[in-house]
Image (cartoon, rainbow, N blue to C red; front, side, top):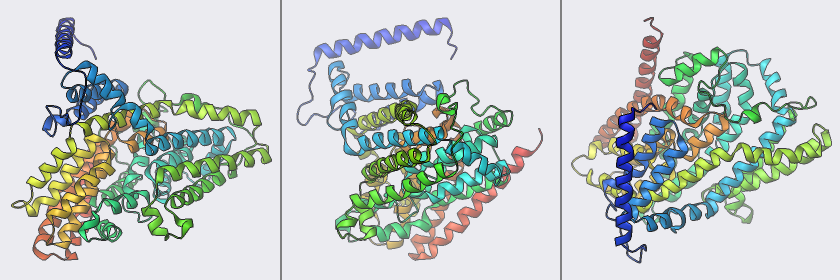
Length: 551
C-alpha cells in the first residue's frame, strides 16, 4: 500500500497518542480480572469489533498474520478495558480464550497433530511417486479442464466424513491433475472448500451430523438426529453451492477476482500473486519406482481407518450403535488415530515395495511438518481470535438480536436467522459454534409450529456453513488453502463473490419457505427448494451471458 508521506506522519502521531493513552490507563488500573469481572463492551455491538478488524485488514493488506494479530490485540484491549498488562495476560493465558489454553484443548491439539500427520503422508506419497503416477494415469482418462474440475468435485462429495479431512485429502490427490489442466490454485481451493462443509452438513454420517444432533437441547423433546435429517431439503445453501459448482464448471463461468486467476492459469501461472506457497513440496523430485497403488491404497486405508477411529471414540466397539457412535464421537481424535495408523501402514507398504529408502521416508516426516507451519500458525491465531470474541460476549449479543426479531417478524424469521448466522460464522470463523448458539434459540421461538422449527434450524445451519465458507479465519477455509497449496488471501477473495451469489438467492428462498411454512405448517414448504435452485440456475445463466458478452 502506497501511503503519502504526510499521511504517514499523522498515522505515527495517532499511534503514539494511542500508546501513551494505553500506558496512562495501565498505570491507573489494576492488572487483574477477578471473579465477576466484566469488560465495558461486554454483550454489545463492540464485541464484534475484533473479527471485523482482522477480516477488514486481511482483505485490505493481503497480510493474514498481521491482520489476525491486530484482531487478537483489539479483542484483548477491549476485554482488559485498555490495561496493557491485563491485555497480555488475556491474549496468552486466559482460561477461555488465551492462546496457550486454546492450543492445549484436546480438540485443537488433535487437529494440529492430524494436519502434521496428513502432511507427512502427502509428502511420502509425492516422494514415492504415487501422486505423479496418478497424474499420468488421470491424464489418460481426464482429457479436459472441465473434467479435472468435475473430478475434484466428485472426490470432494465422496469424502463426506469430516470437512478438514476432506480438504487435505482431496487436495493431495487431485492437485497434480488440476495443475496439468491449468486450473488455478485459487479455483482448486474454492472447489475443495465448497465440497467440504456444504457436503458434510447434508451427510447423515459425518462429524457435522453429530455436532448438530447434540446442539438440539435435550429438554426440548426433539430427536436431534431426526431433526438433522428433516433439515436436509431446507439446507438451500449447501445444495445451492453444489449446483453452482457444477454449473460454473460446465459453463466455464469465472467472474470477480477468480477470472484473473483462471486467465493467468491458462498462460501457465497457477498463482497470479508473486508468492509460491509450498513451492519446496511441489518441486520435490518423485521416485521413478512408484505406481498408482502407492497413492490409492494409502488414501483408501486413510478413509477406512479415519471412519473407524471416529466411531471408536464414540463407543462403537463397546456395543453402541453406528449412528449413535457417530453422534457421541470426537472426530478430531478419531482422525488422529486414522492418520497415524495409515502412516504406519504406508511405511511397511513403501519399504516392502522398495519405492523409497528408509532415510527418504524419515526425511519426509519433518518435510511434511515444515509444509504445514503456515496454515497451522493461521489456525492457532484464528482460534485465539475466536476466543477473544467469545470473552466479549459476541454470542450473547447475536442471540438477543435473533430473539428480538421473533413475534411480529415471524414470517421473515428464517431469512433473518440465515443472515444472522452468516454474519456470526463469518465473524467468528466457526460454524459449529454458530449453530450451537442459535439452535436452542430457534427451538424456543418455534414452539407451536414444527415445520417452521425445521425451516428455522435449517436456515441456521445453512447460514453457519455460508459464513464459515467465506470467513478467512475459518478452520475449513484455512485447510482448503493448505490442501490446494494456494495463497490463503487469494482463496478468500476469489471465493467470496461465488459464496455471496448463492447466499443472496438463499435469502430469497428462506423468505419463500417462511411464508409457505407459516400459512401451511406442512412439508409443502419444501417447494421452496426447487424454486430456490431454479432461481440460482437463472442467475448463473444470466451471469454467464453477461461475462461472455464482448465489451
